[in-house]
View (cartoon, rainbow, N blue to C red):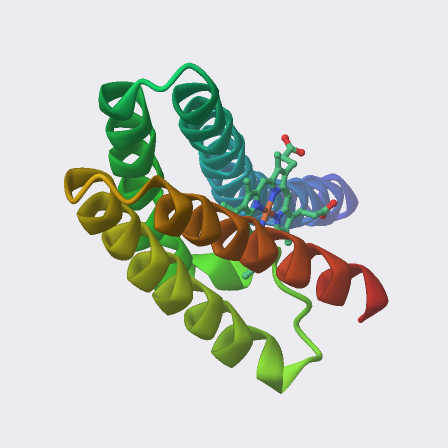
Length: 142
Ligand code: HEC
């Protein structure tokens, strides 16, 4: 009887520790999934800005910029740590820097569009794209 109780207690313990790791793993995945969703939204936003530029639709460009700016909150926050390499202490600072550059150039793009300076808007677009690729390249090299 005693042996059975020990076995039950042990398996309950094992089950609960498995449950605990599963739970934290799935929370990790939730954060990751959310951030990856934002990344895809950023890509959509960039495509929309580009399409707007090619069709000379300043409205579509502006919608794209707003969509991009909507994702920056996550990129600027602690949330981003879920997708950054944990062993790199500069990764988070780097993420914050790129997020603030994305802010800067996207605001500048709105002013350029509103002032009818399409060449400046195009320059802003390439600066935005540079932020995306510079983080992606760095993260892959890390
Ligand atoms: C601070 C770093 C950082 C910045 C800035 C950044 N990304 Fe990412 N992005 C990542 C990381 C990390 C991943 C995941 C890479 C991996 O694990 O494969 C990712 C993945 C992606 C993916 C793949 C998503 C998926 O479903 O797998 C897309 C698309 C993407 N990013 C688009 C963009 C665009 C567009 C921009 C710029 C507007 C951008 N990213 C800026 C870090 C960044």
